[in-house]
Image (cartoon, rainbow, N blue to C red; front, side, top):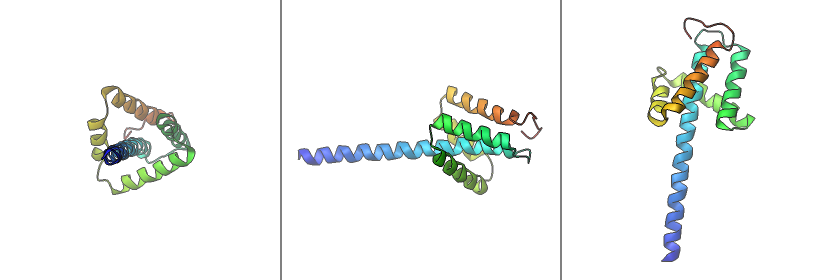
Length: 122
């Protein structure tokens, strides 16, 4: 009986951890997608913008180079499938604190100004 309970709670913790990991990954994709969208909105996705997005993703999410590249590819695929940025903003809006949302907006402005030119579409 004791072993059953240990295994039950161990499995529950594993399930909770998997849920948390999946949730965090969805938040990362949503944030990365918005950064990519703002950078591409003026139809001039400059190297400066690419580098800044890479730095933000790597530092904010504490990811390896390989994980950053994978996240960017996954985000690009999500952007292709999306109709608008609403699905990304909705995920962030429902799961982030005000301070975390402010940080995302700060990063969006950094990307918009990364190339030294603020386009009307950015």
